[in-house]
Length: 371
Image 1 (tube, one colour):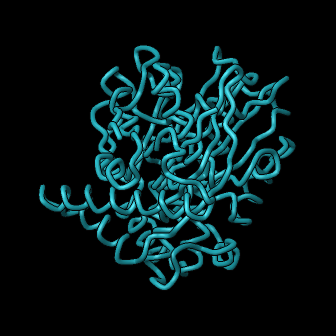
Image 2: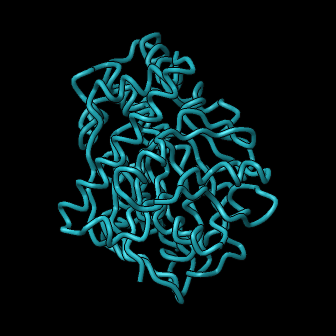
């Protein structure tokens, strides 16, 4: 048994998630011991966004260190809450904060692993995406191998949908079976919904419980214009990020809604429906799943009833289930997965699923910073 902490900061910029995980092999197993999520302050989120949009070399370097400190502090706070000493950890696995992701060409995550190793006193596995990109892959999504090995149904097919800032879906033919498994990013998850909500009401970090989406109505003409984006028709393997579905896309949605005479609530409803439409269309078009293979939802979007109900309605009669009810808190999933991927790295085992990323083959991911 190995005890580790996975650290995740996603494209939605909602905050830092840390998961204390107990890992073992044969068969692969990852048990969530403790989980903590701490939101970014408005100032922190603003610094990250400003650096992505306008930062110079010094800004990037300083943010790299600042995020390393932030992640290290989050790890130490999780350990204190769980009453676990740092010396009892085997390692920390940090995904980092993505500031640039150009599929197949370059990907960059910040959060200096040397700072984490120095503050926590354990080895750190980081920079998971770069090796897959170097091998001709998209560098994303990286959750699918864990979906196959940890979360697939033991006897039949299962779809696993993660609704983070970007949505990605994995089809697992059966737990532990990589042959035939498939995964890709479908497009916006909650990232555009959150960005539109913040633009229209800076006091709201997101559309809590989908309340504003319920008060509005999706505008078909605006949806048609947004759905014309070439990404949605592109064939997998494919991945995307804030570079394509970020602030500029959110501003365009708001502008189109206003031009059509829609309200602020209509804009949020349209953003929500965009995620519903793109997820369901991607599953119908690309996934080989049987019609009665259940869809299991995790991520921040699983907490948005308007989004989940819309997906269930469009996918009926396919069963739609919450990851929480089958495994553990779905918001901890990605942090746990990166702890699992770190475990594979330290044991010299591949962490990518080439069918999902398009890499030339399986690759051991990440780099290791000694304690």
